[in-house]
Amino acid sequence: MASSTVFLDLLGPQRASEKGTTCPGDLPPASDPELVERARAARATLGDRAFVLGHHYQRDEVIQFADARGDSFRLAQQAAARPEAEFVVFCGVHFMAESADILTGDHQQVILPDLAAGCSMADMATWAQVDEAWEILEEWVPGGTVPLTYMNSSAAIKAFTGREGGAICTSSNAAKAMAWAFERAERVLFLPDQHLGRNTALAMGLEAADCVVWDPHRHEGGLDPDRVRAAKVVLWRGHCSVHHRFLPEHVDRVRERIPGVRVLVHPECRREVVAKADEVGSTERIIKVVEASPPGSSWAIGTELNLVHRLATEHPDKTIAFLDRTVCFCSTMNRIDLPHLTWAMEELVAGRVPNRVRVDSATRAEALVALERMLALPG
Ligand code: 13P
Ligand code: SF4
Image (cartoon, rainbow, N blue to C red; front, side):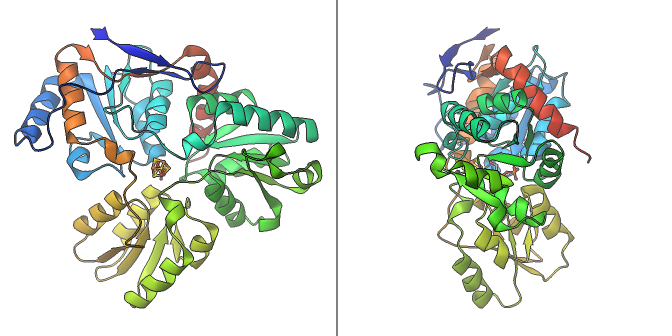
């Protein structure tokens, strides 16, 4: 089967990942009344040769075609558990497709229906920045730090993490992963989401003063050896452009607007928002908390809008509100729409492999070590 690939190498001396062609000339218009039927037909023709994964933040029009849906941890597990599928069609963002490629066999090909579906948080830690930071930290405190990297990072950063004795984590297992890291070193470098890192550290009983922030845009991260030596967690100055927009005053306002509402937020939100919320949890936990709540209960949810809409639709017996009306969809997650998914599946049916995401073997081997450390954490 033909596969066209364009090589992209922005992330460091290791080749990060290869990307296939994007910008399909034959992209069906969103207004095509046959689109759902076309997608159904292509999906049926592919049968067991393809496995379609959908992140909870995907649009409804896409998620209806997902064989498995989940948060990034669950999707990584699902990708690893499908060795029989020739194609893994990943409806999510680029770092998730890279992780799926790392966790799947050489005989499998991972497809991202739109290669422009990146993640602004993952882009906030480039390989060159992390390499420089690590060199300085090692000079200041030799052997005193272990990297712990959020799934939302490039394959090159995951490879760095594996090479330097660290592990990957997701919002579902960040506390377990941090405990694992503290068994190995007195200090953790948490990449690239400062909010998840800080929220996790504080939930584990550390103080705000135990955390310092490494700013990759300042000389030596804006830190000095004494501050790093005194710190238990060095947080990378990155954030999610969706969750970062929720503010503490949004919590106050929604409590005024909906009496008795309970506020449930993702740990990618700022500390001040988490402190005011009633519950904090990963995407998967947010879903479980809403499912387990009694009819008539009211929730204001601080996470991506597609998921909050879906929860509201699936739980008509509960009041489900978005924490703040001005916060919008994740624009990169939303790039995967029905036209792109239909196009990608029809290309596969036609014998062409579109938009393949492929991590080179050296990066893959080191990143796999870090991912497997995560998958081996106690359940
Ligand atoms: P989880 O899937 O780990 O909840 O992360 C949320 C997210 O922002 C994914 O991009
Ligand atoms: Fe990245 Fe945030 Fe979008 Fe997730 S929701 S893909 S972290 S920008």
